[in-house]
Length: 225
Image (cartoon, rainbow, N blue to C red; front, side):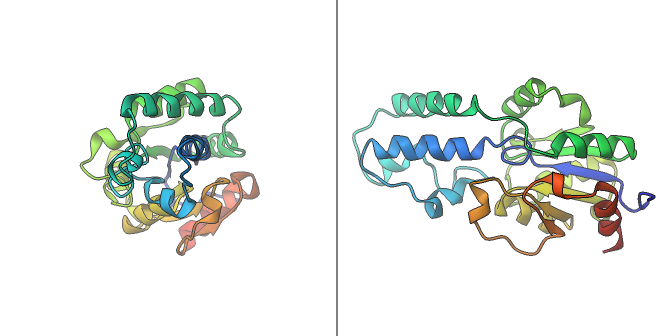
């Protein structure tokens, strides 16, 4: 099957999409909150998944909203320590490497648009040995507003030299999918164990993992939309 000429690029999210860092963050915060007999619900925590901490800041909520006498530095340190331990069991999500290889073989450009900082993203991409796959990387360091604002995706499109109709986004969170949609990009949603419980809008396809997709078929399907 021939790759449709209209599809020229694939743009990945990072956290939760390539590597599931998000479930570990939620588990780490939930455990830390439990120490103060506070339940951190997913509905509350969802406000910061795939975006900035402006809507809900899990580091500050116990201090600023509940007025608990907590040392913020020690709290942050404990959360990061537990997150690091939880991440030891995490590997690249199923199907990601195959999708990257397929895109390269098909001559598509590959971009990355993440609401996280560049240092965080590139450190993990190097560990996963996939940094060189990406023709452009746009992160929180490049924009004034992260997802669901579409600017990250718009910058990635400009850097890749393609239009929104010539690209496909790969996302795991509602905030990320909303950003892709606002930029005019068709989105494949592949939720992780945390975000699968959240509500998503319309998308090109929703799958448990990229292994469920026939790469050539989905790229041609996107071009036909």
